[in-house]
Length: 102
Image 1 (tube, helix red, strand yellow):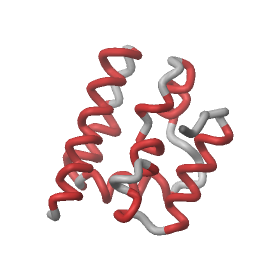
Image 2 (cartoon, one colour):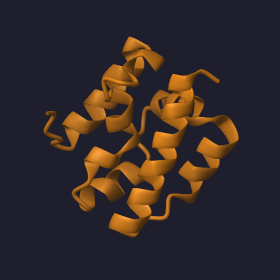
Image 3 (cartoon, helix red, strand yellow):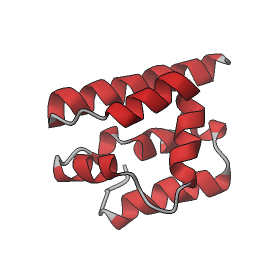
């Protein structure tokens, strides 16, 4: 695992904790995927689905799309880990929910 992949893995665990603490959303499926597959592989799997995960809607309802996996994927620090198609999928999901990009 590269340093960047390791940093992404830790960031994925961090957004899980934030979602649990700040939104009272316990994303057990997400956590299991990340710990079993690794952060990058889990994100790629989630992005490959045509249907956004329910967790994204939980975060939207909580007003915290900024701590979504999609927002993390689009972070300038991690973009190089993903292909253009994956980045577009993440961006579109957030746009569809009215996320304001900074």
